[in-house]
Length: 170
Picture 1: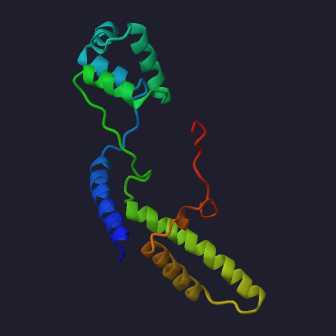
Picture 2 (picture 1 turned 180 degrees about the vertical axis):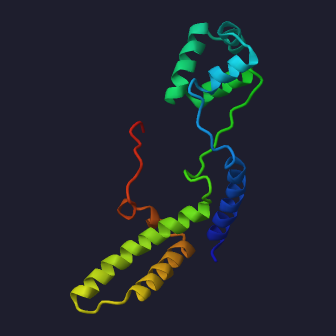
Picture 3 (picture 1 turned 90 degrees about the vertical axis):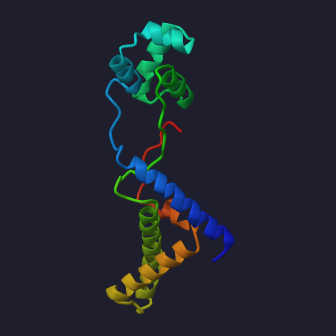
């Protein structure tokens, strides 16, 4: 195994250990946003918080209104959280909280392998050289394992995806 692959596997394992801690936090944002909810729970007024952050009370009000719309910066969240003796905990985690990074890679590799095998088996059928379903499953598994072993980024090619979730605001 190449040194870069070993490093990538070690890094992935360490990241997964950190992600496992976040899997328990699979809760949606409060309807009012976390800032307003925490501020209210702590009994801090908008004016008091604005003074602690060093901004106008209108700025805090606007940030609290934008947070539920996901239109605030992490920097703003951190500044306000710190002013309330709190911190922001930020992570990117699998959509399915029961899934690991390895699960995602395995699923993506299987999808890519299926596309590859489907293209080849279609051509073979046209040439009257079709193979059985059992052999197709074996080939999909073999190719998926090969893609994973090689760290092949083609598993993320768009043609191998069912559909990318909407990223309209990027």
